[in-house]
Image 1 (cartoon, rainbow, N blue to C red):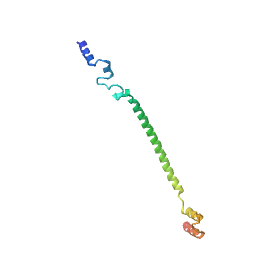
Image 2 (cartoon, rainbow, N blue to C red):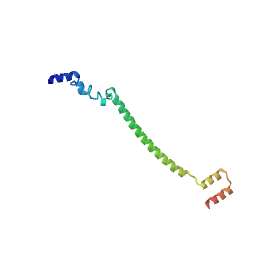
Image 3 (cartoon, rainbow, N blue to C red):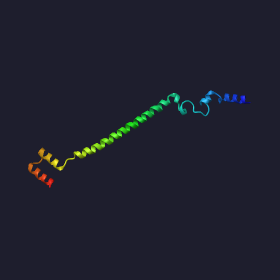
Image 4 (cartoon, rainbow, N blue to C red):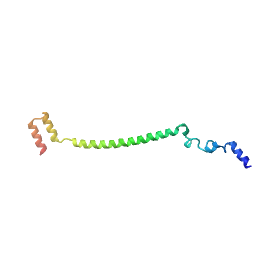
Length: 111
């Protein structure tokens, strides 16, 4: 009886090596979780994962660079602001105002 039962199972494919490897029963089939790893799908996910991490690293580097440059420009703009006296001196040097007007405005600024 036991021999008959195992023969029927073998005819149905339940006792074959293919079933043991997962090709006909409840198994997943070839490759990891049956997603066609035998067809090169594993390399696709590997490449996509590498590209993803490269993009993350590049994004972090660009974010840090942007933060450094944005703080650097605000401090340089603050240093480049000219005082009213500096502007007055430049206008006098360019000849836009004469000496009397320069002295009068300078006196107004300093008082």
